[in-house]
Amino acid sequence: MSDTVVIEAQGLAKQYGQHVAVDGVDLRVRAGEVIGLLGPNGAGKTTTILMLLGLTEPTRGSVRILGKDPLREPLELKCDVGYLPDAVGFYETMTGRENLAYMARLAAIPRSAVEERINSALSAVHLLDVADRLTATYSRGMRQRLGIAELLMRQCRIAILDEPTSGLDPQSTQELLDLIQKLSRSGMTILLSSHMLDVVQTICHRIALFNNGRIGFFGTIEELAAEIGGGTYVIDVEADGVDLSTLATAVDGVKSVKPVNGHWQCEAVRDVRPQLAQRIVAAGGALRNLDLRRARLDEAYGRYFGRITNDST
Amino acid sequence: MTAREGSPFRGVGVIALKEAADHLSSARMHLIMALVLLTAIGAVYAAIGRLRDTTAEDPYLFLKLFTVAREPLPSFAAFLGFLLPLVAIALGFDSINGEYHRRTMSRLLAQPIYRDAVLFGKFLGGLLVIAIALLTLWLLMIGLGILFLGLPPSVADIVRSLAYLGATLACAGVWLALAIAFSAAIRSPATSALAALSVWLILTIFWGMIAPLLAGMIAPVDPLDPFSVLKQFEVQQSIARLSPQTLYAEVTAVLLDPGARSVGPLFMSQLQGALYGAPLPTLESVLIVWPQFSALVAAMILLFTVAYVVFQRQEVRA
Image (cartoon, rainbow over all chains, first blue to last red; front, side):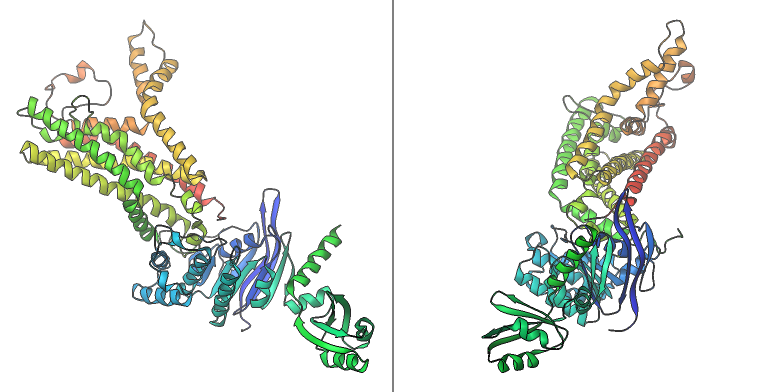
């Protein structure tokens, strides 16, 4: 990851008549980052993406991607930016390979390189065996993977994925996430929108929380957890014979303790497992389990939007 | 806003060839071309039978292949004029909304091409397919003619029939542009097909009835003024010419019949000194229908522009 800013949006806004879809979005993405755009449906994620790509003209604000303006230099920009739309479609009377070959010709990839690039892209997404079947026979997961193959084939520097995992079964979701991580490791900057929190948490470096056409929060998951209050670390404690709620509050760094489903959930600003274990054993309790994990995004998300609605009412 | 960079025509060729390939392999195209071929062969076969019966020596035997009809079949030219708009509509009615329907539009536009290229490519692809089909038909006709009449066509025959081919392509272009305009403006392919077909029905079948009615209202005949009859006729003709089918019929009539001298009213005084039935030189015939031909091309460009404006302003959300 470097410090070069590849995507920069300032005061981006889009109005459809009276309806404000996006209301002043600022975004700075550095090269090599994976950014998750997160928010409920209708929060303005897709409209923001379309404006970044230059497919929709913003009412106000400006966009610079790789230093170029999507409205004035769209061709050069689109050579470097790949887009995988929500529920991607393909020409169903053509095979997967033919679909890719068509896009390769539109992207003006040199003829000599096309064949090889298509094959390596298809094998990277594990579609080589079915490449010569009509895309009409592809499952949803296969279509999404074919869409990823297109980005690989075009060797984009930035990939924008709109709801890449929506409607996929857990196994396909995991496969797709692995692919996206592979893209990221190869140096691609990735922007993905989702309303599935676990998706974003496992692969994104930073997240942007969308609400009512604005970005309410932009930063890492830890920063989000810190902003909302509560610790960054969550420790699940199973212990008998002690009352942890009184015991643990004395430990430095513990923010709160509450009983959840027969165990205690302890939020802390750092790893306090040794101190906790010491106290429990010293108090004569039987320690069964100490489990440290990061704050889950859905917890933070729920609290964040809970707070937003509480504030507005 | 300052000018955008890059050529709007980048990718036009790729899209046009892909569209043409799609059309040529689609069941829809096969079906409609089978229909055209069958009717064409039927019409030509009937014409040949009739020509053998009646004309032993006619200087424009080959052109007669296109125009001569034997009951109950209409002539080849009449068939083509009727069916060609149908072919063009079949090729164009889902060109834009079909991309939305398949959810391929945003991915297509995310490629390094302008929207212009998509529309141009679709139009050229359709036109290319129609041109190939027309050329095939034309060669088939010439072949059948040589085979059954036993005569090679003259140079004038070839030039006239090629000019006719060009006019036919322009007429098909009008309908293709209309179908594409509807496909850009209407989101459902079925609705846009119906809309294009109803325009076709109105302009092909009902326009001939509507024009005299309108002319009667605009320029009523005054029984005391003989020139009012002429006036009404001219008004009626102008209204009728709003339909590309009328223009195309006039072009056909003059190009395929060297004896035809005018598409409008002709006075006895204008015919003074003329040899009745004597053929016009090919170039003269072309000059007579040049305005009609230009009008067809203009209509095509106009409709294409409408499609262009509608498409450029559209939100891409699928």
